[in-house]
Image 1 (cartoon, helix red, strand yellow):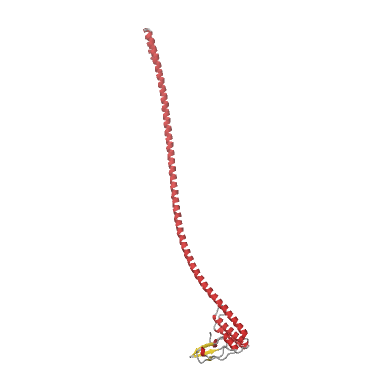
Image 2 (cartoon, rainbow, N blue to C red):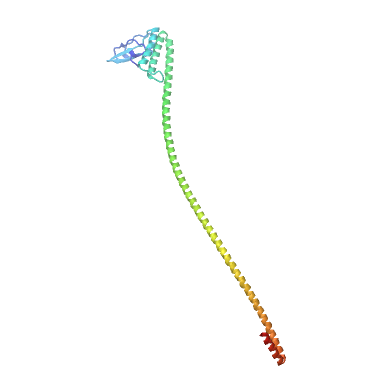
Amino acid sequence: MLPANHCLVKYNNPIQLSTTKKGDTKKNKLTPTEDILNSILPPREWTDQGQLWVQYVSSAPSTKKDVLLLQKNLDTKLQQKQARETGLCPIREELYSQAFDEVIRQVTVNCAERGLLLLRVREELRMEMATFQTLYESSIAYGMRSALCQRQTQKDNEDTISRLERECADLEAKIQNQVDRVNAMTKRAEDETMLMTERHKDDVTLIKNHNAQLRKTLGEKLSLDAEKKKENEEKAKEDKEKTEKKDQEEGKKDEEEGKKEEEPEGDKEAKDKEEAEKKE
């Protein structure tokens, strides 16, 4: 609480008591209004050089001039303390709380029941402010926890992304290696197929040429055999004809010899002569 000379609530002059023990203090008898004011705004107590001092809230009635002075002092203190006009500001909250307490004091002096009602309103507002502050602190704590969880989650996600990117890079490298191997195998297979095709063509050409040569040789051989066979047949035919002719001649000769034996010798000589002439 601010010192008395800096507070917006109007207090009486401090009273010095004879002892610091609260049980031994001697207090004057208070009126019902003062008693209500002290319950609403408790008196201040402090010790100075072993003496107990107490300061009660003022029970003097207020006028319009006091209200205007309160408003002026409130504006002045807001400027002096450099309180913020918007948002949360503890200084502005404290000054407005003092101003509200002073308004309650002024109302209570004139009407105690109205002052007690304003006290209930003040307590309700303080409870709401405490609730809002608790909610604000809870939201701040929740926000910080959420931010930390989000940061941890983000870090985990970044680590996961980095790991997955490395795995993807490794898999892409493996895929590229496999593609290179497949391309090399395909090219080697194509080269081997082309070489085998060329060899097959050469072999087919060679076999065809060899077959043609064999056919030609076989044809020539068959032609020779046919010619030889024909010659042999012709020769055999000639030999057969010669043999038959010879046999015929020998048969005729034998017949002629038989006839000669039967004919006289003169006729035989004549015939021999004729045959000699024929031969010549």
